[in-house]
Length: 388
Ligand code: PXP
Image (cartoon, rainbow, N blue to C red; front, side, top):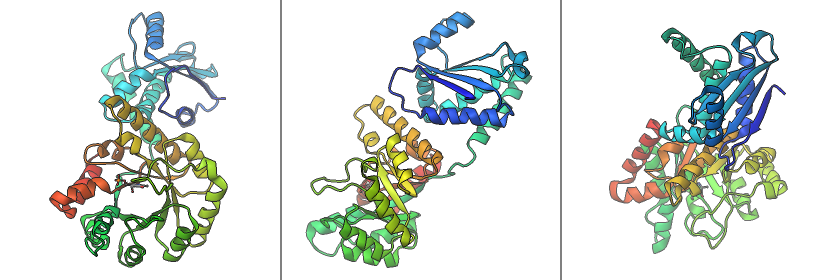
């Protein structure tokens, strides 16, 4: 067991401990220390303050401390490299100030602590600091190689159909909206064909299948009628969502863990027609593992709780759940999308996550389009994605 993890952080942990351990193991490999052991201790601020006081005579919490086993000189002889201690409380505060996720910041702190264990010390001299930071940069790059460069935007045009259905006439047409969104730079069009046909109609998706130039993503409940329509339509992908007749919009993610057999079967039927499947799930580890098990290609992480958060504190917490879930899904080999409730204020933070491939946004873009036009509303959202 090369990495001995102790998680003494008392609060709910909006990060994936297993991923941190995996990164520590990768660092051991990268540095030729695979035969060494490393102890990783996660604590809160009061515990960190105690450790800092006892061992460094500094009566305050800090983000990360490293203690080489028997001193850095013993590196070659001792099987235990040493201890890295990280305060999750401080890491959370720093992540927020740096506008990054807790997971990404923990990676940075882990690398910093690790390089200390290798005998580097930025406090010795300017040259030592330069050497240490160059090495940290190198390891950070190595840990983050396979990341998504820029998140892409897919536009959900259901709301255009909702407006049309309110009058029961032929306009506005979601087909026209899809074309404008594509011309403005959207990389995909998303439509939800509901069982009750409250917005998108069969005619819409049939025309869209012929006109969409980018990618048609059919959102759907896993019911036999809609499955058969999808198998006949051949969209570029489907996103399975839970669907309740009485809801205003999709509420909560799919319970993949609770219906593995059924979803496995639906995914297999789609695979026969080369239709990749995305599962719309809450940012929850058990749902990610279940999504992998049933053979999904993508997961779409439900950002609704983040978008609806009633306080800044709750929003921060929900953001960390999304960040952690996205990392976990990506590391499990799933492609990662996200969506629901994203708008011109809350999207940048999610778009900046390095593992998310695509955002699916409808309401906020259509709401803005009423005032500024759909072309501009889409372009403004793409700018948010581009500069996140
Ligand atoms: N993703 C899924 C799975 C959805 O059901 C919806 C809403 O239809 C969205 C994304 C887009 O949500 P919003 O309209 O709030 O942007």
